[in-house]
Image (tube, rainbow, N blue to C red):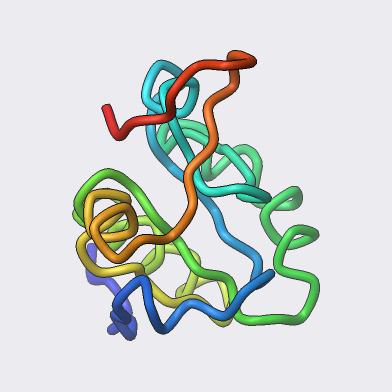
Length: 114
């Protein structure tokens, strides 16, 4: 299987409010994620493609994981499906290091990248 070439950008290059797809596992998501991100674990991407298309809504979709490997695979797949996608290089580790906000699902919990 060949993958489409996908652009990689640093977290600083992700526009505020841009559609962001987090493809990490549920326990990773619960620990901390970007505000407003849509969570669809990598194993559910194919079956939830219509939902992903809706989330992108004719805009560039930014895809993120922990360090950038899983999101690169998902971004390449989504590009093959005709979506305008960009991989967030360095994942949420780089996101946090760049000072971009994180939230946790549990009220009062300090968000972190798992």
